[in-house]
Length: 252
Image 1 (cartoon, rainbow, N blue to C red):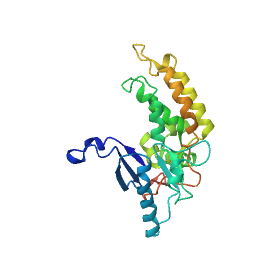
Image 2: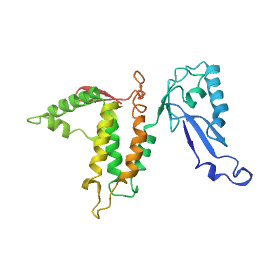
Image 3: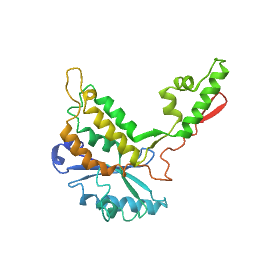
Image 4: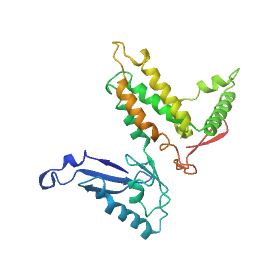
């Protein structure tokens, strides 16, 4: 579920100024289930939520178990307003969307035009995600078999890894979150590293606004638990497409 003001700013004529937010809910297939224009982001969504819950009940579809949001995901005590609002789905896990978490940290950068900004975002993603080890092991096995079929001499693990492309990793390997402790440790290390000389461009301009980033991280650190994968919930629907490499069947 995501809310934005960008669409409402495009309203013209008599509709101009009648709405402040457009909120949408999509499913795991990328389909938009509902979009509404509201004057407020909070209470204005009650009718939308109740209507969505009712649609699931009327069609006999099992209620979802996971909802990613851009805000209002968790509270320290009791239930959040969103959990109360989605009370018709008592088993619903509400989590902060990881892209929004990354964007919150990115506001601690001096500018997104900085030469190191893309590197920062890529490394931040690597602090949060890791490749599924079982998928990687299967891809390595397939690549080794493929190299042996080509009769290459001295096939080492390093040689196998160098022959696996980024495209192959993305096609045949799933990603998962690293866990709270590992994520916190890696992000702290990244921020500390970029506070030093490695975080400056050739003109000496720093990537991070140190004071602002320290405040942002102090506030957002509690959401690291919220962005972790929910146990038992698969985020990768199988497409049914398979590829055989070296006699090993890989599934996309």
